[in-house]
Image (cartoon, rainbow, N blue to C red; front, top):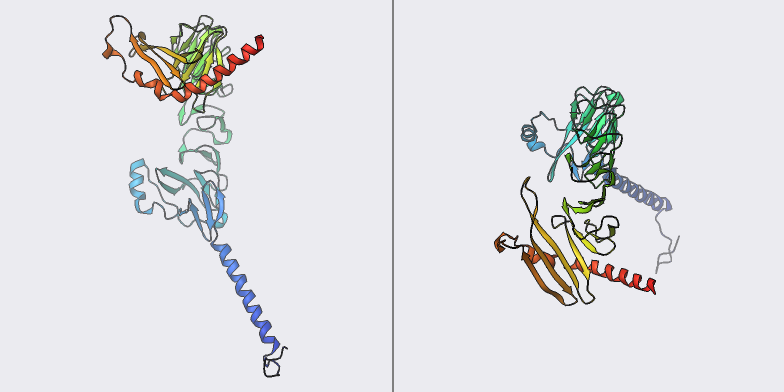
Length: 398
């Protein structure tokens, strides 16, 4: 032992007391670490977590959230709901954001803006319950949709056709919770977007496209609501008889073509040549795009009613124009004016809206005079691409 300073004597405290104190301190630290572990939430996925003996969703206890107004919410949805209770945290499993279970019960989470209620599914079997797709689940006895039993569904043979929308069993096909009358489950398949087909019919969602040929029907991408067979073109469930089905193709969104012309929302682009018309570039993530044929450039503006403007590079300016059409309901669209203007490095010049003869100015939509200024950045971006392409073409010809 070290001598006490100034006394020349040894420390009278036994060494064992010092060791015992260190052991107590070490045990205390272990206890703190253990308690800290108990207090720390364990992430279970899809917004759920376990903390001690309780389960939380986005930081709120699922057996407490919504307790004060569960009866009011039950009345609103037209169904008796029982808020979860006595949840066994140790065996709690997250099957999806909507469906969860423990060893004793199955739960479904209802949501409302800024709110949720986790309720018990009293008739569900926790041992065999599993999530199949968005809001769709099954156990050994039933199929479930939005926490409700689907009558007439064979749970054992249930399979997904299009996640979140269409499923089938060995006997029938369902669109969400509605049985599709006459659909053949053996041959029923998803094409693209909301188009489906079986051996006999083509469908948009759960609606049969009358007269459509399932053997020649083709689609044009997940973002397109157009389809065509050997005889006709369809926009959702509406036939477009003015189009040539064998040569029909979708260029971009609501811009399409056949051997006879190029069209934007059913209106023909008079100066566009269909054989060479194509998409040049996407201008941003909002589906605005630069289009072109062999001579002309066009810009598609999704947020402006899906309209198409013609662009012409004049060196020191970009000339922009489009015909304005108008029509209501089944009335055919008719041209009422031409909107045009020139974009320069310093801004806009020569902007004007010229009505067709005998049309009064008050019949022209007022926002036409401001639309070009609103989309100036997109026009400039398109102009940069056009100038770069023109430069490359010029250098190639040298």
